[in-house]
Amino acid sequence: MASVSREIPDELSDTKLLPPTPGGLPMPDRGPRPDTGNLAAPWRILLQVENEHHTTLGVPIAHRINIGRADSKGNQPDLDLTPYGAVQDGVSRLHATIIYEDETLFIEDMNSTNGTRINGFQLTPNRHYRLRDGDELEFGRTRATLRLVRSSG
Image 1 (tube, helix red, strand yellow):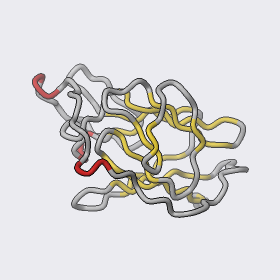
Image 2 (tube, rainbow, N blue to C red):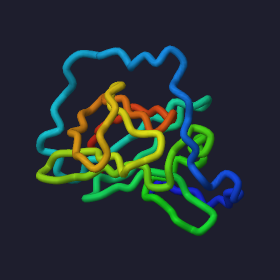
Image 3 (cartoon, rainbow, N blue to C red):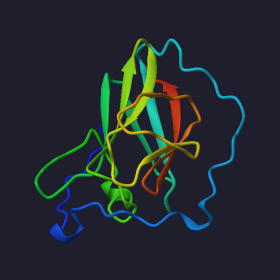
Image 4 (tube, rainbow, N blue to C red):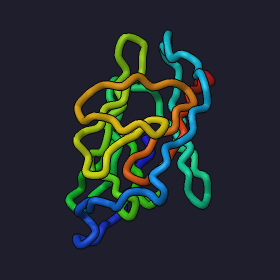
């Protein structure tokens, strides 16, 4: 689990609706992506977060992985984006969930304030969308590339 215990000031604890991105252009299509079939353990998810340090976060594949940001009341998502500018980028406390079902990965936007996108495509809240290796995800304005890797051991 990638989490950081951090106190967030109350004035920053509410997600605010962000204006559209400059130009409003979607991410370019990179062509076909590998399938996610047969993802039995010991696979891991790597999220390569696009920030000044190009951070990579790794989590083992689990039935549900909640993505969002911590708050001052002690709520802690499984994958906490707070240290990577989540408040400024409009990430909700419970923004999205990655679901592992029938050896396939899906993502669901949890009715977040600023939405979730896959490869520039805006997701409808509370619906499952299939994930593939190399997908570019956006949680508000936080961008990350999804990588699926086999764990050693």
